[in-house]
Image (cartoon, rainbow, N blue to C red; front, side):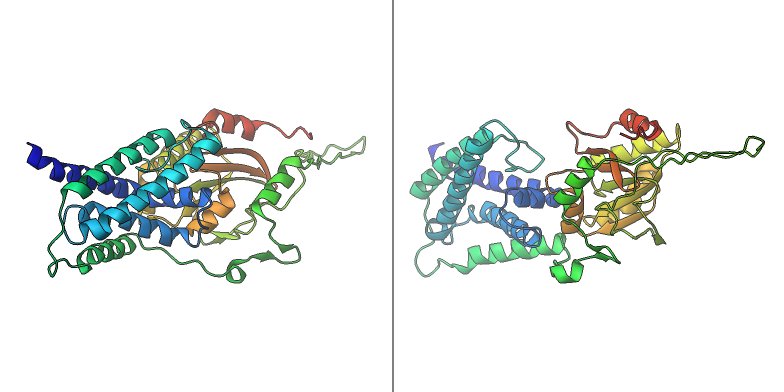
Length: 361
């Protein structure tokens, strides 16, 4: 029984790293967003960093089972990675608390608090020490460094092949200006200005002659027009649009997101009970091939536009989450929903907001 302990320890470490790698892949954009939110890199570098890190975890899970350069390279690299994770987790525990949030070690598959992840890493380090003391490499002349390097190269190639992405272009190439109005404000500035703005009552009082019998429809009171951060979307579904004019509903969905699909189904059901404002969908360019399936499953067939991941999160908000919905009136955000927790989508709240007349306050 004792003879099997070293290989058992290696199998356990292998499983931990392989599960960690696979769990971060689905969906991979969630791992990318976590990297950006942590400030490790920006959206342009996140696709590269995420795939290379996942490939490293997968390669460790395979390489720990073989003997080539096991003690001189594979185990030290694995230990260094675990120590780096422990340092990061320690910082997160100091900042946000030991039991708050999901560390992302196993993606969305197995949520773990920073403390739980820290303990898991320390135990894994203990297993590595045991493996180092009880395992042997190939003898000199048969010990090939190219073997672990080949494993990592294949893992990295597979990650970039299975999860392709469009590289970022320069800011000058992507910057959008609205004619006569200058460049777009930052997301935070635009949002703050919208929240703090005072809406002007644009209802007009009509004075009719005493003998007039004409029927006149009085214009509905409405907020004054502002330029929103969504104004750059001028064409959606192949048609020109102005999201800053009138009542609009803008939905931010990821094609493979189950919560997005459930929200779309709720919107479809709500549309049977009331007339929704003109509705448009902004899809994240991640698993875009699933959009037809998304439409078929939800029955929520609305004009849509697919945008790259960095731009998607820039417009939605870096600290926001999917699904995201914005009810706009003349560019003003009247009601918004995001994520699956405190401010998650509420059909009743949206219905109330849409049917609520403008108060002029």
